[in-house]
Amino acid sequence: MVNTQKISSTINWLISGAQPAKRIEEIVEECARRLISAGVPLDAFLVDGIFLNAHVRGIRTIWSKGGGVRVQTMSRDFMDEGGFVETTQYACITTQRLIRFRFDDDDPEVASEQRNGLMAQKFTDFVYLPLFNFDGTVSGCIEAGTKASGGFTSDQITALRRMQAPVARMKEYFTERRDKQITLATYIGEKASRKVLSGSIGLGDGEKISAVVFFADIAGFTKISNELAFEDVLKVLSRFFAAITSAVGGNNGEILKFIGDGVLAIFQTPDDLTAQEEAAGAALEALEAVSTALTADEQNPKIRFRASLHLGDLFFGNVGSGDRLDFTAIGPTVNLASRMLEEAAKRNASVVCSRAFKDVIPDTTGKMVECEFKGFSGEREMFILG
Image (cartoon, rainbow, N blue to C red; front, side, top):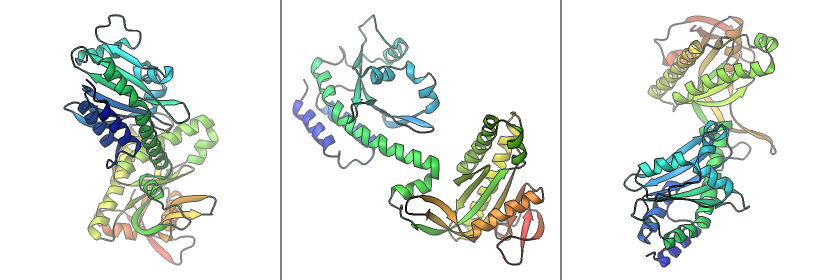
């Protein structure tokens, strides 16, 4: 028998902000615990949410009895290109109606493959409940399953249905927040997005940091863009940027900006020699990873790239005007790295670095040349590494 007082208490807990939990995983796990305590024999409890994003389109928070709680993301490809539309979750969201699998039912109407998978896991009953947003749309659902003999009773189904509205409010809050985080990170980078979401949104908000500055672009891009159709040029850029993004992110760097065919990235480091050596080494490993990825890429045209590396202090924060801000890195360190990339193009060099960078990686071999850089007084040493 369901304890309706405990169900009401759980609803009030959700409506009042689900304190003290701070993450959706904690809330879903606590919901499951409270429902079980109220007499709903859960073996699985999931909350699914959908949102708009360039790569991640959905998130599932999954609780299972004996297995704890975990979060699973759903990619744009899965959700937009056929996989998701075959699921019961999709049917629940699009029909905006409860869907229930009773495993004594020999004539299921939808998603028989998914139904059979649940049966193989020994579920006796599985329910999908749509979650309605404030505006009446549906962009998620609850999944609740039991392995109890006979499945859910009518009172237990009623208890689960009473959870729809409060869980919908919780889901809407967390998916919107997650959507903002992922979307901002996609456009301005992970560290920058965290700063913006934490309130660093005013003109001039930012900090002085030390970092390896990494500039890269495609060698011969002007020729490529003049000879290929726009669609093919975009494919070339996407291949290059995918290789760079994976390599930089995989070595603890951060992409700050795509500029035409160019990329600005940083590998932040404290003012400590060991940490600077590690950041410089990570930048070199990222370059090697880009080179490996582009060499393995069998598509045409083949992409050649060049890069410049420098180490120093810079300002990392908001610049622009009151109506239009950009989160970026500025300062002489960034300017010199940019000028070095121009010099690399003039000398047909693949990779160049500054004296400051070379000093923290002394084993790196390269030809030293003295160059005059626009905006900088006197000659400065630059090393051609490849």
